[in-house]
Length: 311
Length: 320
View 1: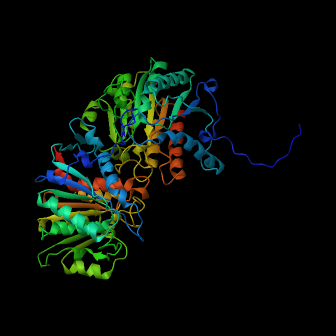
View 2: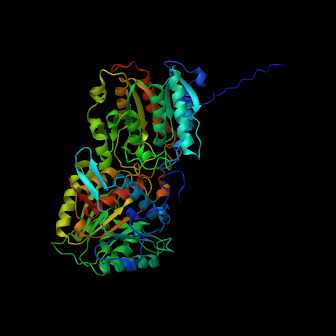
View 3: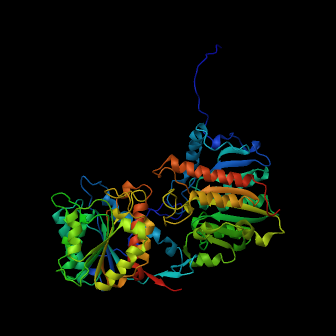
């Protein structure tokens, strides 16, 4: 077969930050498995976040090509989209839990991107199954508490408005929950449910971050602790990003959010997600995607840090 | 339509979950919401015909923290203040005026008749626009029985735009009451950009006042909130108008015209939250919301939150 010398410039297959594309066999300790969540329709909120993972992969390309201050983190592997069953919520819940568990079993840590918060309890459940001896602290950065009473789980197993309460039940109660960047106005029942937890509003966070990580794990100093970090871009203030929960006009700036995540890097993060970003409804298009990419980069850096606190 | 996969947000919403009823059901003291889905005409950008529906949906979203609570109560994490949504508040949604697609003299007459009908039955009319020109019909409908009306307008301009065969009209000319030295019939807040000198002069002639967007940027929202308190003291009946055009285009692009240097949504809502004239309200008009021009939805959310802040204690109760 003859070879033809063609002077062509080829663009690589889009992946998160240009990371190598792999599968579960490629995962090992210290690696971060970045996975997309193509699912946003089982619960309330505007749909569209299912496209976030795809958009974030495409947005990574010009970012890399233009040599902005971002470089491919050496420890991440793009494992594609997690499997879901689009019209079967119970099966979706079960398979997400299983995939989260299997990734965690390899020693790698899961970073799920896209989708909506209703999917996260399944991922956290998988993490807990893989780390039965670890006390899991769940840190959620979001405008909403999402701690409504859990109603009929058979009829409606994936429900964003009660997702935090579901996770609290997995983790041993509200004491295991830290909610950061919460909107000033929150349902009184949800707020009271989280009385034993750690709740800070966006306004409170914007004043000072000193000692935040220490305060979150204050009651767990002598225990084996793992932290799951869940970031929803709805925490960003107007007019940065469109997200899938109602606009309230207050929140954190992208810089403040990145600082909060960086502060949380002192903790041993065993899994994370970034949800709620709706790329196709955003007028500013790629600019918004680049902002979210920066936030994800902060999460990867926080996950890659050696924990300065806890075991 | 329910998607059968769980909770749905795509159902069509009435304002604040009020029942949909007709005019005969209006009772004394009730909040009566209706829409006028009239579009803007050139040179203004079209899209306002979808305004009423978008404002209703945005209002439901803005109230979601209350509706997620079984007791309809929210707590402020920053201040500890506890507020309850008054489920017992009497309100109805009449729906939108039919066959009402552009601003014409017939449209204004329809709005006028409906407004007068609601007012005569003791209801508080709340008009969802629609192009801002519908305000003329709304004011005429109220002034037929309330001649001493005080007009509080949040807008970037001092006139109503021309539409079809209707000429532009200065805000000051909408009021029928005779000016006197102790009256304060008009307060315009958020005015921005070049305005016809005549409009400015006429407002001063009828003893009205103007707080520009620049005044608010320079002196803070107190420049506006203090003036509203003065205005509220001198008027027994207040019609409050929010023209979404008062918002800066960078924050809320969904309006028929552009406004560079306007108010931010937070400034508008802060001003309204720091003032209380709900008892004196005789009508509310929210106009110039064109959702299709704002894919991020900020224009309708900001307008909806402004409307909820205006209705204040009629809808919310401080139970701290």
